[in-house]
Length: 115
Image (cartoon, rainbow, N blue to C red):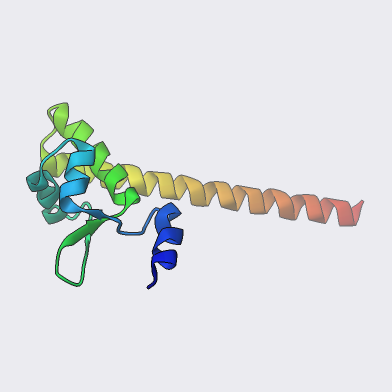
């Protein structure tokens, strides 16, 4: 990958652009917290060629939500489960909205052909 290719991926939410140290700094947490939510399977960082953990912006948003819950007194395992369920609910709502739009479009198309 060239430098130009890497630069173009900066807008990619799933591109693992951040080292563990940088991710921890950005979240205002410890590297141990990032390891703990990895062990709880909330996020799975990619590994660099040298074996170092790398995080994406999407993963940092997920980690930030878990940190909010932990800061409010939620045990880390429960916080990870809550965040996973929130993420699943958001995805289900997105899919449901797509199905509703497709159904409305099909109804409008059928109505215009029958009219």
